[in-house]
Amino acid sequence: MPRIITFIGAGSFGFTRGLVKDILTFPKLADAEIRLMDIDPERLDFIYRAVTKIKKKGKYPCTIKKYSDRRKALKGADGVVCTILQGGVDIFKSDIEIPMKYGVNTNIGDTRGPSGIFRALRTIPVMLDICKDISELCPNAIFLNYTNPMAMLCNAMQKAYPRLTISGLCHSVQGTIGMLANWIGAPMDEVTYTCAGVNHQAHYIEFKWKGEDAYPLLKEAMKKPEIYRQELVRNEMFLNLDYYVTESSGHNSEYVAWFRKREDLLKKYCSNHEGANWNPGEYHYIVDEYQKVADTWKDNIKRDLEADIDLRRGHEYAAYIFNACFGDNTLFDFNGNVPNHGSIENMPYDCCVEVPVVASKYGLRTCHVGKLPDQLALLNNITARCEELAVTGALEGDRRKVFHAVLFDPLTSAVLSMEETQKMVDEMFEANKDYLGYFKD
Image (tube, rainbow, N blue to C red; front, side):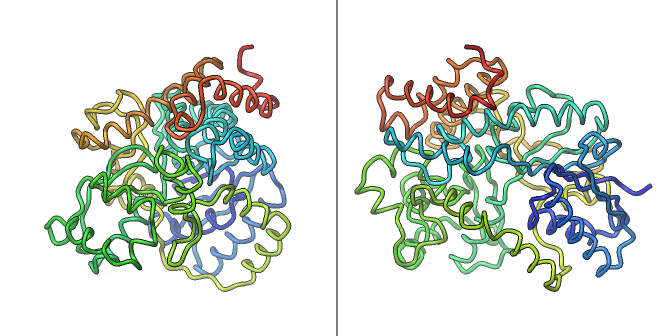
């Protein structure tokens, strides 16, 4: 029988279109039933048209269906992909602008820190509702989450529904290793690596070219200004911590105490300068990007619908995972966000870690990494424990635990007093009151 793959939040147009295209390139999945579900009927119609166009051009025997009812879309699914966004630009804007009133300068704010934590608090109830539906309607499905904040959402779901097969996926691992290979002049098929830690703050604890340690070559590459300037924050972290981190400079500048606490540091490391990559870390970056497309997204999609489609397979993990699990059963290894049940020995048990995972006909199997280097374990433990507190606060409806999670956030604690942090958290709760009625007074 054809496999059923359901997209929740399918109106994420570019992503859903690309992933469906990749899935259908696998012969054993070409006849899949693709179910597209979104609460926005206009976005749903756009993606339905786009996927139908892929079906016709590829002459695939697949079936395309669209749903506004999540439960109908999930019934009997083999694979589920989630790309939802809870709340619009206005509430996300408050995640960025309220902390700035208190001096906490945020670039993207979708992963951790006060901005990421409150985004998680809004989104966790919806994710748990999705898990409830999956547990009732397709309990054996492979559930792949792309929604941020990745680690906190996966942590909450994995704690509340430990019997489900849930993994979070991020572009940063494969994207960054390609960048590093290019910097040292290595073909990607000759590079191997082991990457582990927490989402957006995982590190390549091994990076090899033809079986030899490639980090000395990377340090040499850093001496070239045109390379060093591309990723100032990440390159500074590498030169001081000895291992390269997965996510971009703008993101990482928010997660640590070293780059955003003074104006001179912001100017030096987090502003537009010659040679910088797409987002060095300016304040308010992602909200500004959202606002730019708020009035033009329909025109952009209509233009995309008219353009020709390149049916060549891309590099998103999800398509390969589904193919390994219930397509041609070829083994596929990837970095996934999973519970730490001993895979990283010097990280908290049951926190969410991003580590190597193998997909096969037996499902998803997490690999054992061992211990992180001490300096990376220290950095990741702070992050993971703050995230654990925030998730526990959400699951228990406990505002105090959320406050403590923000209190120990590295950037927040580098800038604010305890009293100022409490005032900021109170104001953020008030701004989110329409979403956070499940918290105790």
